[in-house]
Image (cartoon, rainbow, N blue to C red):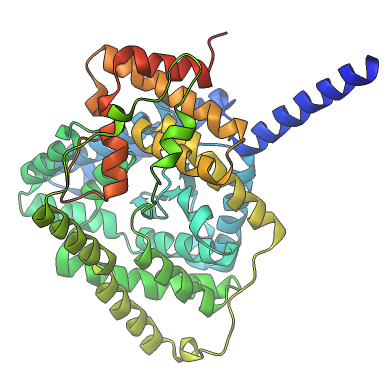
Length: 435
């Protein structure tokens, strides 16, 4: 009997440890307060400098844009959309320190590096020595040098003051109102996506079109120099560029119909075929979807090819194709796995309950007995239950759009919208029982 109890306790402890290894540390209240105070002081200095540097009317407009950037960052912090998990912060801070110590342009800067829960592999310079790194970089990059290359690129934007220059240009052209309208249009979107906050910040900081392409080439060139001085190999700089070009959104996934019957045929709620009933695809609309998919897969490719050609032209050593990329070390592999598993709860914390559920189901096709994914499936359904009860489900779950969504995603969305309120609650209670 004692042996049985001991084994049971051991299994519970192993399960608890495994769950901790798949989730990020959220016990970071003190760190968030400290970072917020540091950001307040940094923005206060920036606004005072703008007040001195520019005439009254222009200075006020620029300060208004800085205020919006500041408030957007505080929203990130308050809604816990940034992580301060020491496993990631230690890793990124070490890379930033290596870059600082190797480059006179960075050595005396008090850099603030923030890590967003956003699963898309990207990063953003906010100017004023602040950069944001998306956790998705750790999922899609193959080694630490590729992540370092992306950080070096963003630090180059910061050194070159692209953000500030774009704000000045925008204000001088009296474009503030149009910029406000663009960010309002992003905010107006009924469906709250994890991309929304990132897009709002990017809209405030960067221009579009030809000027943006020029700035990217400038940041590539200086970024490579900064990275090279810190010991980064050129092949990894190029491979990071290629990956960012290929993945500018979460990759498409396909869910087979049988997963719904397997996961949602419950003791208290037998599966109903009517949940999956939907109108047949309109061939014209589906054709448009396929055309959009092909365009999306290519949309940034020509620009990035041009950027790679440009950086190779400036640095002939990058034309040596025989050099192999750096292999993944164990420490980076551990972070990559953690970022992969944590993307499900991260999407939940980003309030993208629909996408988090969709990807939970996909993971359950690979790991059908995984309690971690089952738990988060339940948490997402509980959040969707609360949202539907208050008539706000469309903020967290997309509506069907045949021209823009894959048949698999449409089937999933159709399934969610076909469920009654009490059915959503039953599913939530099954996978995430109330204590």
